[in-house]
Length: 114
Length: 114
Image (tube, rainbow over all chains, first blue to last red; front, side):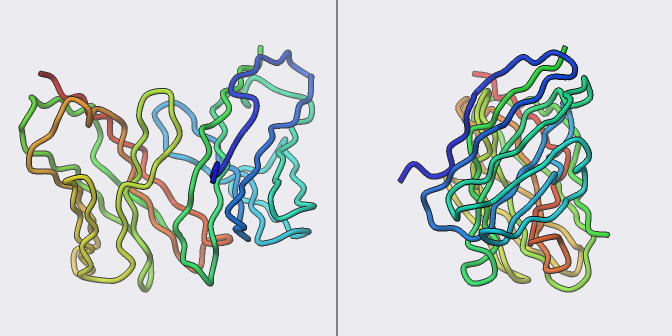
């Protein structure tokens, strides 16, 4: 199993550009999450999904959008990138209620908005 | 709301020293508690977990005991190695969290010197 994979590893964006961060998992997990990690801080939840076709906002959703058309994939879309979105983005997945709350993380995408 | 507080770093220890990283939480009922580790340039890896009071999680020589009476989940290791240098995050999951998302502490940076 590859676990949770994320692409790209690193990206530089100009202010106002848009991009999609890709996330995929091959563990057949129902629950998926997007977090951002700012320097010296813990991770904060952006969006989450409890199954294909179901998404909801987390603590810091402004400026982002997600979709979940399949169990495996959970892309994060940034529209009109801003310097405040410079961060490291982590995708995670878990089995959810049935299998317990342990989350498995991808390697992260480092984003710099200039 | 639910929250996690962990001791601030950085923590610098000599090899073979004893390690304690304090973590306390605020939550109603019985959250699940986790320690994640982040090595330089990598994503978060689950180090250990405990899902009910008085449980002890352990892995790679690290231990933490879920103390309901003190709402704590302190991380300990008897003899640290240089390879343990990383950032350690305490986290909780609760059924009142969005999709059982994790609440993270800010992280504690550990540097072990030879």
